[in-house]
Image (cartoon, rainbow, N blue to C red):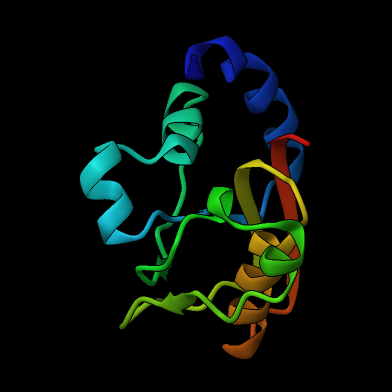
Length: 124
């Protein structure tokens, strides 16, 4: 399905030149079962380059949690070692439900000194 959205994603994200595109990662456990990162698939289909600077801890999927549980989630993201810290980041996720995933990713990036952070989600 990534190809269905490729042109729209490409046209939208090209407006954000100068931003480092950072996809929301999957945990190692989730990647082992799914075998691909759906956010990276969307970006690949749209021919958008990105940097994998975040890693996700192995935690229960957000889809198994209630809204209250999602909003009270603890930090699940870590920064990869030996990365160059970008000044401006565009976080990309596939689905925005409560905003907690983007909030936690933003917090992890702010903690290392990223100055400007915006986000893009395909669906809400």
